[in-house]
Image (cartoon, rainbow over all chains, first blue to last red; front, side):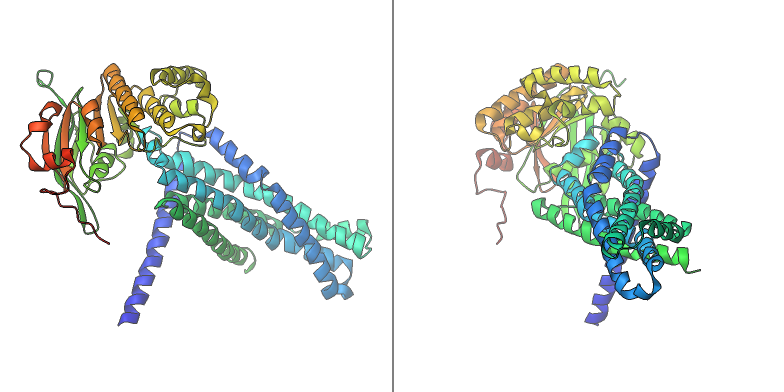
Length: 256
Length: 260
């Protein structure tokens, strides 16, 4: 009996949370498409998410590209340089580019959003917005969702280029491949659907990261500890959701 | 017809609000006449903040009605609600200044965002409001985090009055300030309310402050108003609960449950 009760309670809690997040997301999306808009804040968020994440995402991408080349060299040595270029391009554009950029941004931006909005919640700044006739969803949530969805694909584009470059560096300078042939095989390996799926993933990941950051920040309570908790929850839940949706999108694109 | 009678600016009828099994407001009634200043006093956890949050629209009551200028705001659509909210200005306990904005942007926030004023004109208006509350205009471009507690309260007051609201709310205006700064803020509140001709609702547990800023006092206990009258009468109200509260006695009809 007690076990059943615990299972039941757990299940209800999970669905209640999913429901709350869905309502929050619906609300957020609604306010993304209805005026007033706050271009100044959207721009500031875009710079924060896009520009300031470049170093982290770039470093992650270059090392990942290099490692991919190294690993595939030992694995596919018999297949030659075309195979290595292929593995690097597919690996980076389809999976590792979007996933690693998404995870890095979840750590950087999701946490920052949760901490900032959470602090605004516990210091009554969100209440103050309401008393100044400003909808906190429009002012805080919508601009972050818009900025993240817009910037993540661009970040992933950069990550793709830098990741492929990492593979190129290792292949040319370490394995001594011919740079022209390697670039040529890179170009022929690049397939539209794989590349596009990576960018679609990026947009979805951007949405998830911003959604988790704002949701946990917005609902944080109980002072500094609550804000810390919100920050942790934002990063962990964004990372898990990101990997889940990575699987779903991959299945949708390629399983048929 | 309504012009002949003193119209109630805010009227709260039979307001109830519970959190789980905790009944915070239990059928609270309260009327505030236009142009008067009321201080709601009461101990911690008696429902003061819940009352003010319900009136402003940060919380939805379980039952009862709240009339602002005769309009019931309970169950209003968000757009209509926003129209009513434009009449409000509020000074929060911790000032609640936006720390991502400068001091003047904070003060001009309502002017820019809800009244659509141009930034340059809004800055001028903000500087004017700063002078009104005795803030040095040199700090206009600083971040709120660089200000002292008293200066933050002043900036919060400037932000609340900048939009020239009809109704001003003050949440524990003197909490966290030294007695002298508390008195300075109280005087500024009285001056601002008078200059705007606004109706004011303050919640406080600081009796000295309540006497300075209010025309009328209402005492809240266990989610109801137990006494309501002019500030001059509080010392001989004949109400035991009010007597106990204003003299800060630990024995009397109000028993604090101290647990743990």
